[in-house]
Length: 358
Image 1 (cartoon, one colour):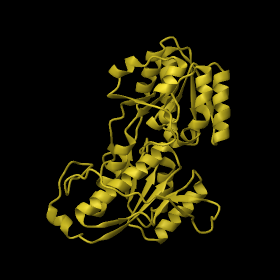
Image 2 (cartoon, rainbow, N blue to C red; image 1 turned 60 degrees about the vertical axis):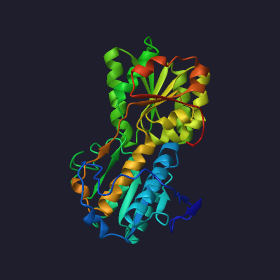
Image 3 (cartoon, helix red, strand yellow; image 1 turned 90 degrees about the vertical axis):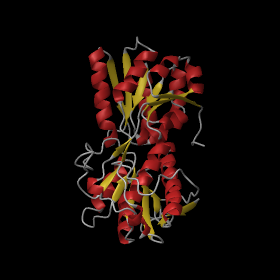
């Protein structure tokens, strides 16, 4: 895998992924967001065109890696279908959760006059939005949990500016239902998250309201680094948390491999807002299929670049977020039955601990 560093920030390493392959391409002209179709005559005029696609991953974790790979795979498939080129290999970066690096990446992409910027995760999307307010380069985000709450779009159906994308919105109540289905007698629930991540704010408030309605005690612990998250996990265990909930929080996600054994040893199930939590050792991850999310993001990119769709009127795409992924090794280690989940989710998947998805 090639590495790319931004000028003036030589200590910040950003990975450039050049993943190829073939994906499941939709028929020519299909509009992902609205379901409308464009005539094939409108797309043939772009044969041979080369589009610069800037991809900006917020941080290196299993879910975001999966999204990036899916975007690139689908772009390659669509390139073959439409007879165009999507050049993402020269414009793909990883910001490593550093706002200074992300801002420098934004400047690089604007200077390179890319045709579209594709930020993956809310913090990256917010910085790319700010960087394109004047130049109006189209922005197609992926894995933004609350685009309206984060101030990225005016509305899900009509974003209203140069930005749209795909959302991994989390049904927090559904996750809490699973927690209490597995153990109806829980008296204390722990919340583990980074309070600086916009994606975590609404789900955390929803979880607190859910527990308050049940008369259940809540312990909140936060952190902004791996070390702080590890200490927060220790504090939740010491505080008597009987289950821990984390929303789609990238900070906790990057720390999961370092903390999951703490929860196992304490017999505390950790429920996360993405399947990658379960992949990295948590008891359960809940939410969307991130490979499908990446594919849908790529389809929106094609609609905008090839078929001329306007981001301002292209609805934000949401997917089914009712997939529960259980880590069977962790479930066995803590002795927790999850068979009842099958009737509470659109899909129940099983997984074992690994660093990345195969």
